[in-house]
Length: 181
Image (cartoon, rainbow, N blue to C red; front, side, top):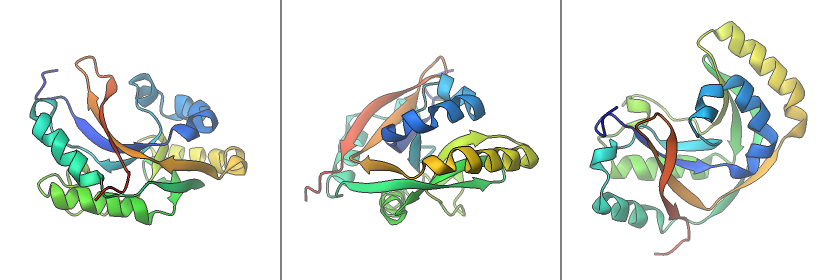
């Protein structure tokens, strides 16, 4: 995979959730876990190709996120899309604000590559192309993971993660939400 083909994303890592959801993610999202993708709420994917991320882009992201205050949230309920199960962050508004702030700054990079996509903040736990398997996953997660919710988390930073030549993802930079400016 060339540098131009490697993807990147801006995310809020939900590290506090790993102890509770790690087992489920290894079971229902094995490939993502193997590739080093932590539990997270996506702010913008895809972001820029690896070769397009330079000091100017990093500085722009620092300025973009510096005025934003840190915030607490709960991963509160198990929900689903036709191809995924996920935990809903409550409140969702701070994530929607981060998404809107980012999309406004990078209007040529719509969420999930779709200008018509309406983002729903979520922390994916499992994926499958078969909606029936997703429904079974949802039922199991609601029964067995649901009683362990909510998971209390903090959004202290937005993290730029990038895909490596071997397909693994790693942290490239982080941008504190410290309310400066």
